[in-house]
Length: 365
Image (spheres, rainbow, N blue to C red):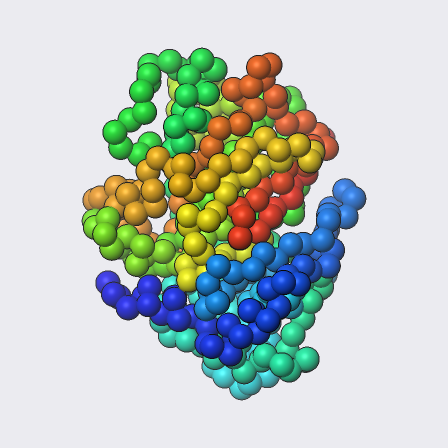
């Protein structure tokens, strides 16, 4: 275990990086993002100011049609630095594959030190600073190594709202321990990509805005008081769910209803732990511009240290693992009458201070 990991994350960018970010926070708005889908162009890509000056936003994107993915550092002023290109420009050998966020996360302290150095030396050099509107953002981790871990019923009001609507009524009170399940790796989707919808299978697709935690180092039996040392960063996430498959089709097992392809968008970037003040975060979901969910991190029943400690009990968490920490009240299936997503609907998933995703529901032929 690397006990210095969290300290490095907190110091992941130099004072020079912090000075630039602080100077541009009041004008932190980028231009319209290029999309590959045929739906109307999304509103301007928002780049919320970081809570901590030494935090970083790290994203995976493509910079031209047909280009290979690359990892970029996104600044408050809507500019970004291509780590791979910048390393070549500075003639530096990186200890990780700069086309892979997983490789960066797994590279540990050495990789983060290199990122810090690249960004520091690139600031103020016009050739190094790209605009976010020149990129197509993918999920920060386009293909996870392992299933996405998820926490169910982690907001009291969400647990209560679903009591009458749930098909299985055997659970009448919130469990004493977090409820865990997983979503398959093919659920991962980009922050502005369409979410596939097959109406011949079910018309009960629902939204679930969540805060995702990205693990930064491998650990097992992690003590709760040290759990935050294992956090690399955070990202907006949506645990898109087909309720009929989740609750009725497969004996009450949630896996299939949670694991349809593309039913788990994440992004637009990961904000490293030093750039986030958890108590200030709100989890928000809008459907076609209408707010459906809005809750504070402080309303979360099992907080992140408890989640990590319990999940890692006898189970190894690896660098790059993703934990979706649960959704608040306001989901569609618990509404009266129930509301479900249909072709053409637009879901906005926002974590205040982190970013906003916009995904359109697209019916499959």
